[in-house]
Length: 317
Image 1: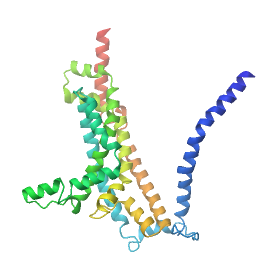
Image 2 (image 1 turned 90 degrees about the horizontal axis):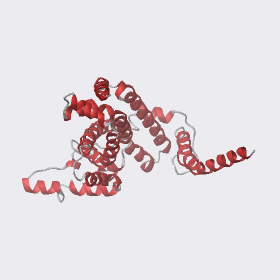
Image 3 (image 1 turned 90 degrees about the vertical axis):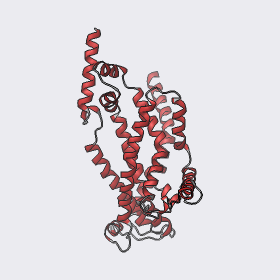
């Protein structure tokens, strides 16, 4: 009887700790999803109380009507280009910086702090700094223009504005990605490296045979989150270019429909189209990209390292 009472008390106590989180999820996540989906089936303008249920008309109009929504497909293509710029660059720099910091260099903590500072800096402040640096008259670019008589205007050119925003985004999130990947590298069994060295492997061989296969799950996680972030990017476009010069992403298009044109129903429909696009891209990633050493293109190299480790252990016994 006492055991049952203690169990009931523990259950109540456990649920009491969960209630705040459950309320948060319901109020700020589940309900907005349900409400926004309902509004996507209406023609509500976001101001008045009256609206008409139009079914999937908003979805059809967004996808097919190039007169009412001429920038929709262009914004999707811009978002895809942004993702193609930012994601590979982010992965390459993250691997490079994390590998360097994992090599036991002096001042590791200092460099980790320096790389992480942009990640905790407000997006508005980061954008303001880069706007000044890239200003063709007063910033660093302005200094180069004056010194070498150049005519650089990085944010004012359609050829360079989007790649510049992608680089700034990668720079801002590099510290977070590096710390996540570095923590994974720190957990790699040192015997794997020793086995690779005994078998004649150098620095490059250890990276491709041991490090890369071991951090594939973490790397896949970073690619996934970077993909979601790339398709949802908005703040830099809004603050640095105003969506001009070929930088109008789909999130910026949704913002314009909602805040400027008061087409809330259409904006909600476009948001769910974006959700489906992200889900489709992630499904392709889960299908094609290696998620672990055992099922990846690097599985042969990981098995090689494990075989070396087993041979080393047998020799030790």
